[in-house]
Length: 197
Image (cartoon, rainbow, N blue to C red; front, side):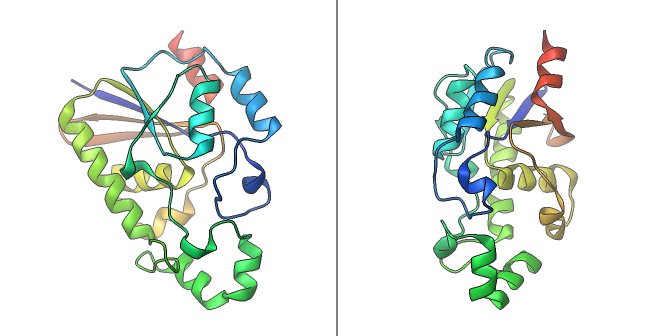
């Protein structure tokens, strides 16, 4: 059986607009309106899982997917003490640490985690999901999780992580069978819903 996984990124928040390390804020008005406008267009999956963030949970509800089940392996990248701070602010105060974190996949954010950590835990989850033959699964996840899943699915080096741009309220599709994943990247939600009707 083929497992079809839709990785859906949440709608925008004020932090995202200001380039702030995620601080758990809710969707802004524009993000909520876009999610509501797309409600009811996705085929109901067998399971709805995702990151435990406020914006992922809100996006799932506004899209009509109901309450998602938070999966620890699908949490967004932990920025440690940088959480809630603007990227520019961190770059001005700790340029070496930020530069190292962005350039070296093994370097962790202070008190947080590295790209390698995120890729490893998302990879473990994908391997377990493939073994389950789960059918159709929708995961509302942070962009970091989409990047990690793409790196895992393609076998790309960890250095590719920051080279993948992931927009809000888009779908990245993985289909898996026998331990192998195929990747379809970044289709707008409207394109996915039109094909599934």
